Image (cartoon, rainbow, N blue to C red):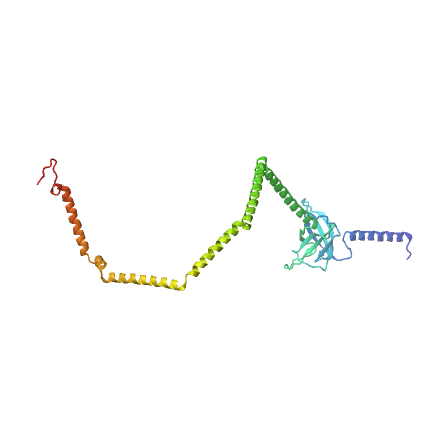
Length: 305
């Protein structure tokens, strides 16, 4: 069988068309010769994710992003279609986490398996989606916090400056100036007092006081040395004799010997003194009442009997 020129041309066109379709799908992340499973993830914002971006598990590439489209319910949420190798298995409750692959802002999706769930995800299942904060977002968050702190610090600094201006008004400045002047005067007085103390310490006053103390100490030492042990013993013997005599006198009084003991213990003396006092009091009252019995006098010299 001979191929005509037209048949060969048709075969080349068809082959080129098939290669074009295959290349187009391959660039979109669809390999027509690989057995893959498709999974769907819903995000509010894909943050620059495009088809053919990798899908990884534990950092290993297991598939690609096949398609990105909007939901048909009018919520403006995005549905990401993932094409994964058929041999990779994970639970249906696993997460599809959108993250940044580097500093330049590349995006990828990581499957975070849930090993506690035994229900294996199958082709066409929807996975739970979440977004991992990227470096740019973290920097923006830190910058926002730093901005808030800077604004707070600037506000506090402004309040401090206002308070400082209120403190250092004209009246307070004058008072501070007066206080500084008084402080300078006090410092000069302290310096002068210190000089006077130095003169006292290094001058004749202290030396004279030390000489007086030394002289007094010498006199006391001389007095102490002049009192011999025999004099001290004689004085102590005299004191002992005096105490013994006093004790003997007390014993005699307690034993009833002598006039003092009788005066203290015999109550007849007290009774006689009391009787004499009573009679003297009666006599004085009688003299006051009848003085003519005891005193005679006459105006004309006549004696009364």
